[in-house]
Length: 333
Length: 303
Image: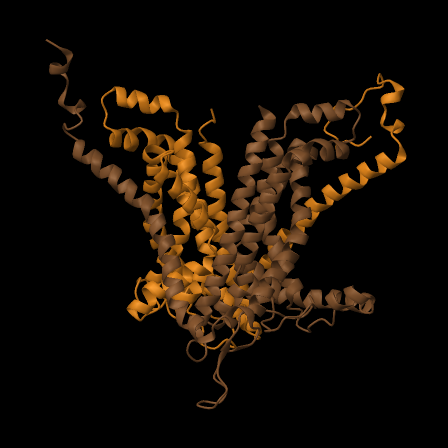
């Protein structure tokens, strides 16, 4: 009698339970494919829905800063115009301000947690960062519009009065808008929101620095800071860049906090203390009242532009992080 | 000598030329400046969280009462008092239904990635795209649902909001659950298979229970995130002033109410926004704390 003949039917590939097995794996596969389907649908639906706006406005949809969503004179010669460059500009400016503020702070916190902090302090700092990450963006927006913006106006005014006459700085830090809702306020609020994500990624990157390298630097007589510069930074440069770009992607997509604090002014100005607008903010603020046709389509078009920007940034982040990972593995091996 | 160095305190037996004092003044100064900057950055991060807590308790606490949690939302922003009852109901309905959809699907998707797809091309593609999907701005999810649900049904409703939140939660749950499934020791699966269990039985009765706490924790964090999402909901949920426990018909939610009341120039509306913010943050913090507690308490030790 061979083993084969005595094999239990449950062990056969086609035996009892085979159907359940196949059903289960198919269900899992479908759930996985759902991700691809949703992502494809997001792309297809938004692009097709926004198409009339692209057709209506042509290339100037991307290059014009004129946004007049309501037809000014009915059947007259003037028409509604949908140029989104001012919003793209605002998105870029706010994200850059957020990065300039958030990156040094995040790297500092990550260094603190991995290199400096005594054990007990470390866990409470991690808790603070976790709390910061948990606060919903609309709450930061609320704080921004009702508390931070009015308070910052006086600071802006002070800065403007001090450096207003200096050539380049005078342009950047011009006359502040009286509500305090400006590129700068939005940038600062967004900075608070991206600190946790940049911190958590850089922290993980710093944790991969080989202890041997650090000890080597210290035993050669380096101070803590010299050790960080000589051992930690060179090793984790790629990862840090990846973390920053990840934060940039998050900053560009931030909607509500920016909508509440940026001031909703459609123009391109170097004055960071002036009100502005941003791609996601214009969508959420005008969606209820989008103007004459194709106003709503144009707002969806803003979403498409934003989507394209974040995809590019995210792709760059993944690329850089992967290259950095390869290099880091090479270093630890 | 600072106590923050993390190095064991130098004893008196250290040779004179290795003492900190022998460092050149420039190097000592740079080190001091750098350390101070690092400590300062921690302080800078602590300030906003302090602000949030202070204002939520001062302003939100003032508006808070039992009737605030249950009363209807006033039609006029200038009306004093009123409550956020409908918004709380709406948040429960939308986030609840979003979780009911996204958690099982997300865990199933994670099972595909961890147990079937693994490093196959399709598995890797889905993994990459799930990462891309987490990076999609939340407002895009709102636009997508607006086009595919609201434009088709000609109605802004709670179902659309739940679908938008579910789409946001799905990739997050897939990726966190996959990580948890990957932590389950391979020997457990082999033991189960060797006893003659089918693949699906192994997964359902061995792998999933072993990773249940991790998956629950990830799901709770995803729910907490979804509860605070504003932009996608605001586009598709409509507006309502009395509670609506149904998925159909216009609804409202805490984040949407905070957003619209924050923009009002009237103090009563702003007060309601603070009260709603306190309620929302309390919900989110409880969910987050529960998630972290589960993660820490029942963590599978990494091997």
